[in-house]
Image (tube, rainbow, N blue to C red; front, side):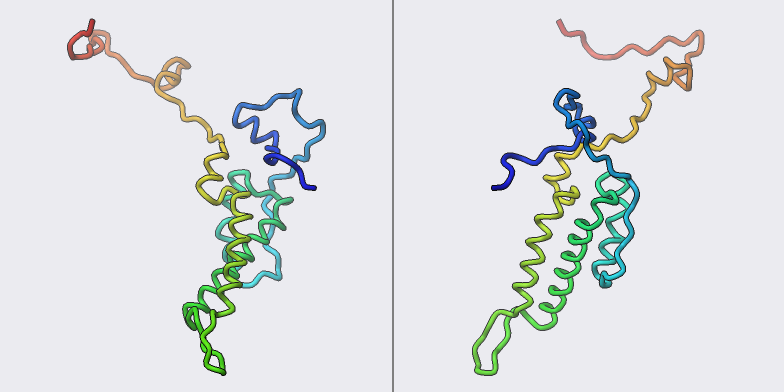
Length: 174
C-alpha cells in the first residue's frame, strides 16, 4: 500500500513559506547541490530543445537540481514525443482508412495521449502549471524602499531648509 496523505514538503520550501518547525523537521534530510544537470546524450532533437528551454530557468529558481535530472529528463522526453506525434497527426490527419475500407483513429493519437498524461503528472513537480506555481513561494531579494534608504543613511528625500513638507489636501473626516 502506498503512502497516505499529501507528499511532504522539503524543509527549504517550509522555510521560504515561514512554516518551518525544527521539532517536526526530519533529522537528516537530503540537501542536493543546486548545480544544473547536463542534458543526456541520447535525447532526440525535440527533447533536447525542451531541456535547453526550461532547465536553466528551473535551476535558477531552485526547482531543478542534479538529483532531479532523470525525472526532468522524462518530462522533456514526454514533451518531445507529444510534439512529434502532434506533427504526425497534423500531416496525416486524426483518422485513416484501413486496406479493407474501415476508418480508424490514427495510432499516434493514443501515443500522444499517453505522452500528455505523463506531462500532466510530471510538470507540477517542477512548478510548470499555474496551480503548482501558486503553491511554490520563491523569495526574491527585497527592493529597498525610500524610507529604509533614508533611515540607514543612503539616498533619501532631500528637504531644503525653508521648504515645508506638503500637507495632504482634502476634507477631514470625523
